[in-house]
Each structure stands twice: as C-alpha cells, then as structure tokens.
Image (cartoon, rainbow, N blue to C red; front, top):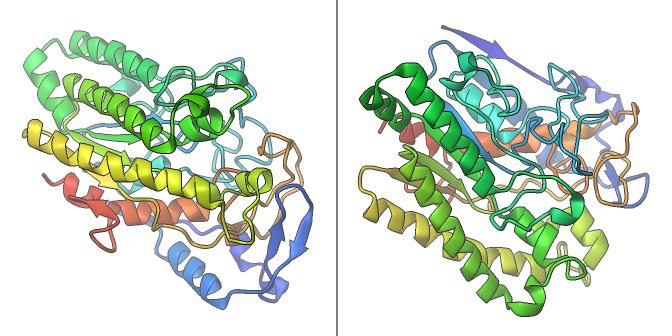
Length: 378
C-alpha cells in the first residue's frame, strides 16, 4: 500500500497577490476583496488530499445521480446537458471526459478515499471485467421524476438508472454463478445516491416547461418527491444494496445561475429556493431513518450538504445562456479559489471538501447516523 499526493499546480501561482477573481453569472471576470480565511482553508484542504492506494475497503462501489456525479454517461445522448468539451476536465488526469467540473467529482474522490485506484467506469462504457468492482450510472439533467429535464433532451432518470442496475445485477449472477455469493458480495458494496436537484432546477423552477409548480406548493412537492424517492431507495435495497449513502440537496438558491435568473433582493442567495430545498431535506432525512428501522439488515445514511458551503464565489468560466460553460480553451488560473465552476456545478476544490466531510464527518450534523468511513466498517 502506498500514498498518492495530488495538488493542483495552479495553486502555486501566487503572483496574483491574494486577489481572487469573481465572475458575475452573465459577465466577464471582475475583482473582489480577498478572503484570507478562504485562502488558508483551501490550501489546507488541498494539502490534506491524501489518497490511500491499495486494496479497496469495499469490494464494489455503485454511483447513482445527476450531473454532480456524471462522469460521461450523457456523452452519447441527444441532449444539451453535456460537458465533453473544454474547459471542463481542465484539471482531470484524463482531460475532457464528460464530468461537469474542472477536475474530479465528489463520487471520484470518495472512490479514492475508499481505496479504488481507478475511477469507476460509466455504465455506458463498463465491460464484464469492470462491473464486479462497480459502475457509475449518474446522468446530467436526471431526476427523481421521469419528466424532469425532458426539455433539455436525453437523460437517464433514477428509475432508469435502477433498471440499468437490475440488468447489471442479473449479469453478475450469471458471471459469478453463485446466487448466495453474489448477494453477500453486493451487500458489502457502497452505494452513493445523489438525486433531486434537477427536480427543482429543471422541473419545479421551470413553469414554462412543467406544471408541477402550478399544481403543488413547495411543501406538497417535497412530500411527493420524497415519497417517490423512498420507493426508489427501497428498490435499490431489493437489488442487494445494504450500505446506501443518500445525499441531501445543496442550497441551489446560491448557484450563480439561479441568482442571475431570480435575483436575491439584496440577500446572498435566492431565499425562496433555499427554503424549498430545506423543506425537501427535512422530509428526506426521516425517510432514511425509517428505512433503517424497517430494513434492519441495511445501513442507510444521510449526508447533509447544506452545511458544506465554502463561499459563493464563481463561476470561473464564460457561461452559455443555460448556465453551462461555453466551449473555450481559455482557463482561469484562479479556479482553485472558487466554489462554482459554471452556473450550477462546483469546482474540484469544493468537491474535495464535500467528499472529505462525507467520508469523515466533522459533526453529527454532516452525516447521520454514520459517515462513509464508519459505514464501510459495519
């Protein structure tokens, strides 16, 4: 076993004299006041990004989600939600892959913390040799609801990701030729699920395209979303999942594109959107707790993203009208100091922070009832 140490080279461009750059969502870069605490914090996070390379702590690792976890499943779909072009992938070892960030996603980093020395392949590219170690099903624009993101084109909803997983589990049964062994094998794996952001961004908050905001109040919508999500999590359990990590939603109202679209009324973020997100999260956590009661052989855990915010800085690319980066080879040297890379998606430095706290929680508020490092030992 040995340790790999990774630091983004651009961090050492200290000639910027502690001045960060902040892109207004629809404009070019402008200067903003330095935050020394943020400088020190980011440096500390990068310095602590040690990855153990050796035998993984779990036999396999399965990833379900949207563009926050997508590593290329959307590349072959007919959709506007793709990131297989620069400046995405600027700091990723393999370059442009279809990840909606400059470097690694949260799922990538958690995989490294679990001890996997290779990134988990997408479902679109996984072979028989890959599937026993895990697959990434995540798809940009996807949601809990089937219609979510449909105005953008193709995407793989959570229901269809679960169907893909059903096919893969059947394939594993065939390859391993021992039902008891395969069931026990799958019960030891880690399953990441991050879904729901698009059910707001690309559904409820798009009244011209979807009827949900005309039919439901924010509380009613959260209730029906969580009810459907609960059924989907039970389906994952039925497919053999026992160690299941459920991510709550981040504060979407702080995303640069939402601020640009809705305005803040002088506040840092769009309060009405964040209020709706908090309602969803407050309903989701008790569902996770109940699943642990009703499925005593399973270990579900809830990751609270609302407290894992550095500072609303960014984006650090030139935006298209839909909030994604416009295609360009121009790269900001200050991206390691930003929370957002484009109008919606976090930078690698933000992903490092989220992954580290999800794996080793700072407080019980961050992960309940366990963080991922404890979950793998159960």
